[in-house]
Image (cartoon, rainbow, N blue to C red; front, top):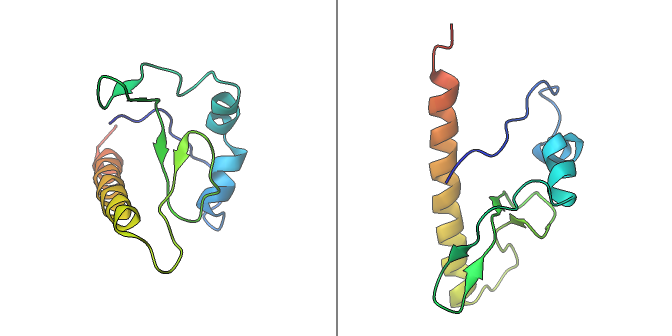
Length: 104
């Protein structure tokens, strides 16, 4: 529920996946220097590490969740995709608000 990095300055025609793979954030996350904070607790026996919620166009990485996109998803996968989308929408709205701020 926070921005861990902001990447800018790439050409508009570059894909989001391309921007990610050119970013310093990817390099630092791969080295374990980003997304290495406290683990969230789901239950007494289950914790989850920090992660990034990405679109289906991103390749799967240990710290990047993407929605399922195969046909014939089971109930759990469909529910995951609904929650994943809801999370992406929250982050999109937050980013739009950040972009609308008058920084001058």
